[in-house]
Image 1: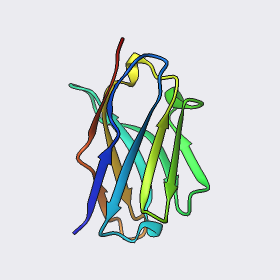
Image 2: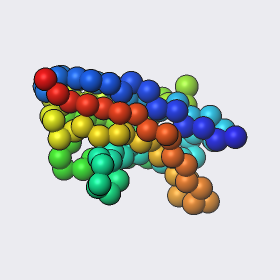
Image 3: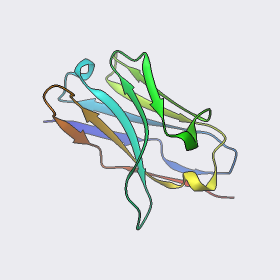
Image 4: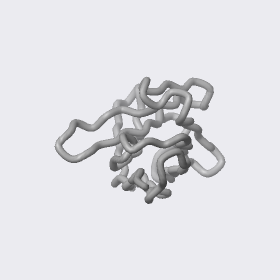
Length: 118
């Protein structure tokens, strides 16, 4: 059974930092591209960042470049999103995604709420 479990969300003040984790199980982690997405009520889910296996290629949406860092650890099959200099507009539910580009298998986590507010 495939599982993606996000954690690390919460309330943070503007300018603060937060690190999200996404622990995977039931997939061969090294075969999957990993991504973070976010969604606010009434809006489409937005892609935030991606990392390809084995972890040397990363891409980001312009609004988070220089502030967020995506990384992956093959030892514990986990992907991370380090978020710095956070802004109110970063407030959203953040989702983790695992995608196998060859087989097209595609899995999502349940999401974790991030709120940036003073």
